[in-house]
Length: 316
Image 1 (cartoon, rainbow, N blue to C red):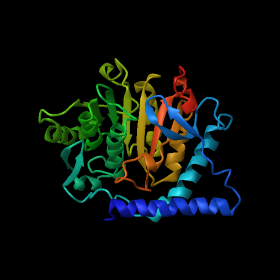
Image 2 (cartoon, helix red, strand yellow):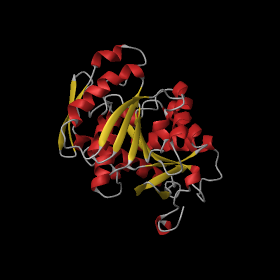
Image 3 (cartoon, rainbow, N blue to C red):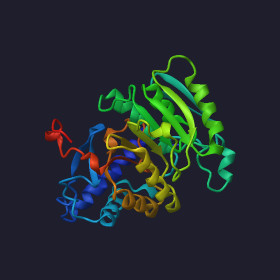
Image 4 (cartoon, helix red, strand yellow):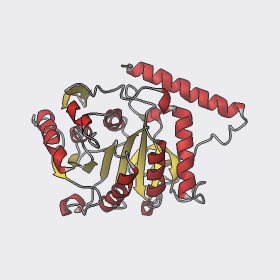
């Protein structure tokens, strides 16, 4: 298993190499990325598409998605590095310090032998997202205190547990047969009387109409890690995101860079309705970075994401 420091060093090498190649080919200007701010997240994001008055506004969703995939695979080179260096999927338990707590996340490694079942073990993208939330709150670019949060495909529940420890009122959702492990992990880690927020478990099948309590009121934040894994699930996922989100909802999605075609298909589909920005790894938790993971922020296009830092005080 590679340590976090090795991750960071390798990521810097890949990033530097990509920039060197761009300069060598005389394309330095093309490598300049457009930076924006999202209304529900105070950090900068790199524009993928869907923003008003953006340089990419005239491009099609398919072109924007294809361009993003080329950039990600060129800069991060995900297939050159081993997956799951932040977790141990063969273990029955993942221990992680977060928010001043020592979390113990139970896993079910034997479930990986069941086709289509991946939510009973941890993946790097879940650890990255959870620690990103903690780091963002500590850096004061994000506040989850008292916010309604819905997590999709919660799996083992790490991300939702961290959201609750950060003061959020989290609803952790998954398929009916995944809820037992999820409930057990919440009981193990949050029922100690010292949680700033709250966490409950609820069944949610993507594509089905959500229970009224999930959208009355609409959540402030929707979270998901490793939820972009097959083309068949993309339409159901995007439909559920549209159902759960008002124009005041911000979505954080982290994904494993294992299949460029699936990610491209998701981006192309989601860009029809959402503005999408990518969070650069310099804004992740410094000890939990991976070039096999990508992190996106999404907001409905009607929300009119802010154009740049100078417009932060203007109304959306």
